[in-house]
Image (cartoon, rainbow, N blue to C red; front, side, top):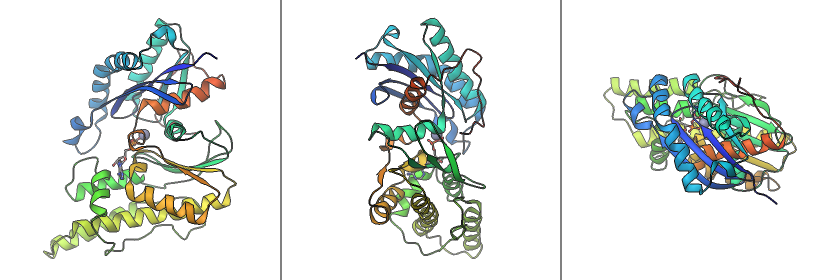
Length: 336
Ligand code: KG4
Ligand code: ZN
């Protein structure tokens, strides 16, 4: 059987990434050019700066991905590209590059939803089996997605305000940490105790939605009050208390959703899925509460934005015959 090779392109936010994926399951190359240093001084991603970096990087990344995979354009069977959600200018760079490559080498163009890509990153760990539940936690999204079968996505709950990663980054800013601060807060949290007891929003509510803005405000008030009173901030305990609150609601609602739906697997994906505390907690809760469910979380380098995951999702789309023509446009607020 001939192998199917897909060139995949991701440029929705602040990583320019290109990968070559074999049969949707094997990574031959996965080049990730991060621009995070250029955005750090602004404390967040500046869309115009992101677009300019993507323009500079994209063709180099495509060349590198082909060289590293030892693949010629004529070996490929398609070009997958993220067309949303994300920053419109950033998305357009990847889409334009994908169209140009597809036209030059006469390859079908496969449109991919970035969030579906995050879920399919788990496919590199273990073949996905349906039905499954996915907890998607990133800088822009926090949602529980039920997948009855491959290619079918039902959002059963989501954040009403901030995404989990966004909360990490905002709280990190208050502590004077470098953007993005999720990883550093995670590390600090492991050295502290939950002594501040921040609220667990919506944890008792009979739905699968989340809210993190109250936690953020409570955190900011605590820090400001302590500063006004001249009290010393216990930064490690603040981080541990914040993280405990985030984990409690994410884990509680995810486990409840998994009990409600007939699933074989639980996937956790997105940038915040790199969180050590969350990986450990969810893994042990699933083992305890849902022994028949397999918990899958991608390795750290596949949790953040990357094109390998886009290639895995593109393979599924191509198998279903979902292709795009050259009218493909960026869809910044694309949902499932
Ligand atoms: O998926 P991603 O790379 O980009 C988006 O599509 O948003 O997610 C980035 C987010 C950032 O908010 C970052 O602070 C967070 O993931 N993050 C973490 C950790 N590593 C990255 N949050 C908590 N703990 C971590 N270890
Ligand atoms: Zn992402």
